[in-house]
Image (cartoon, rainbow, N blue to C red; front, side, top):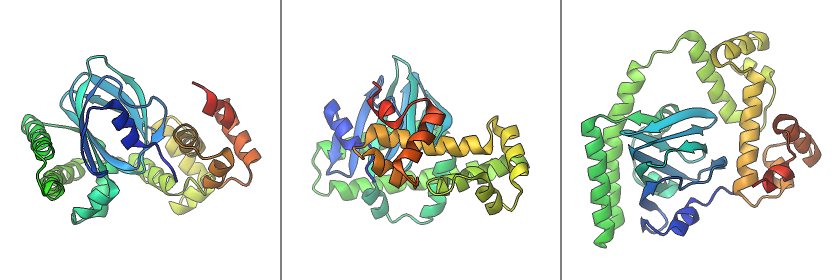
Length: 283
């Protein structure tokens, strides 16, 4: 499936350092990314040095401000809502091949922790360590080190090992209520299956609950019904595909497992108020 070409987006800005198509590092000032939902095909790390940014990651709102860092995994859908004029930061893009080549243990556990904790508060020492990492990486690329990709891999491994301990501490200290834990499990099930399953009953069965009980708890915790969450995931994916790919509406309908393009069009318009074609052509 096609996604927003992040490499082309950054190359158009003209201020970046990179190694092949696997690793990019650049400064961010103001709004450098699209303001519509887009799906990413790389891992993204962004360190906020000043200002603030508000956006959504897989529908959930997140706030970035000074001394915070976001880590986004390939396949997530991002949406920028607002960004301050004085925003400054450092952004790193890493390809899936680069991440896989690191040979880090417990990849699945790390992946799930990154999904659950995409924005992290950096203590003074952690922020300084991240800036030092970025400085070393830039020097390796600028000096055209003959083994620059290998050196960057080693530096990045050290970074992930350090952050792995931080993630462990976060997960150890995070205590969810029973209702919050149910919301978390429901959200994970929807993320896995929303392209094929859009009925609340399916997710209730997966969680060994009645559909009525599941809907009551989800509404109480989040303010939205279970059905609304499912619809939101489907339409967010559809919006990202409509805006950031060249897939036809029929192909998007097939990607999301609708029985026909007509059925997809009616579903999308019922929720967004626009047809897929109207949404694609809108600004």
